[in-house]
Length: 368
Ligand code: NAD
Image (cartoon, rainbow, N blue to C red; front, side, top):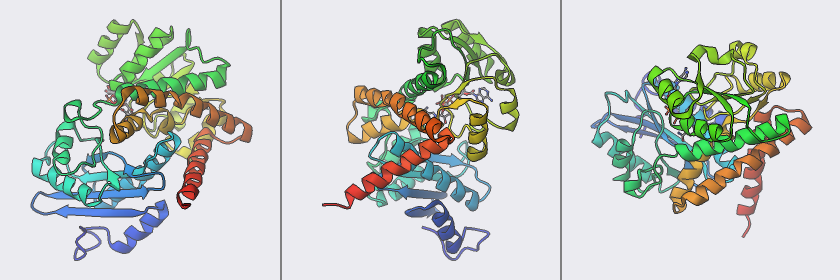
């Protein structure tokens, strides 16, 4: 727990924490510290109206605790919206472990973290995120059953990337229907930025449908492998914003839709797996709308991963997870229609739909 004897410089003090929590509207924030293992972590539970909060644990070398707190508050809030929009009975939560993922990992540290997760009695369910691999999840799972995204040999659902890629493909088809009047991607010029786990499977779907695909990645050998395997074209990482394309699919990093790239991008649709694609949600959300680009909200189209985790929690069934990921198509269409009829950016239409579901289900839950 937080050491209240520490100074503000050493650890964010309670009043600041409470005001930060209030700003993001959180239910609960747990500060975890264990001197013996060197564990310093924060677990943030944003909203449990729809169900237990679920979201991965990130291990990162934050400059200070305040930075870690801001990150976990922001990320956990995002999970509430993502699960609400995907139609899941899950709330939003997230955890961060302050440390260097290349140097500071140990079995004891992760098992201690698992005990903190367990102390919440299932109100928070953890999973993998940046800096955390299956190995550490195995250690966490030794101390708590409130873990999702476990490997298949531990009874988990394994790598969620195939479901994520399928959901992105569904969201992209819906966005194409809205923009071009047909969801047929045959002949469409599509640029896929980042051909990792999700990007490669997406390329596979696109090529099978007859799209004209161009890929890029910072790893040249990876690009060569994908070009050889799928017969697609390639460009250099920075060239992707200038090539002739109908659809831009960011599947690498966030914030690639920004002031610089918006001057260069000639696409009509943006739909990809990367989180937080709009550098500034409000500003760039309006800018893409002004340019006539249909932007499929990232946290909706990349919800396949959380959908997979959800089914792991309630009893894994890959067919059911894929079927629920198919619904991303209809949800995307509904959001795009709301955006065009109300003349509001698509990110705002998505946020409003998520908030409406939480409010509606919240009212039902109060009734006997
Ligand atoms: P990954 O690490 O397997 O692949 C990302 C790829 O992007 C890598 O090959 C990397 O080399 C490449 N890359 C990095 N910087 C680049 C750049 N500047 N230009 C071009 N390529 C670059 O990750 P992933 O699991 O495929 O996930 C892709 C994105 O989708 C990430 O942003 C991730 O947070 C998000 N996402 C993934 C899932 C999932 O289920 N895996 C779920 C939701 C969201």
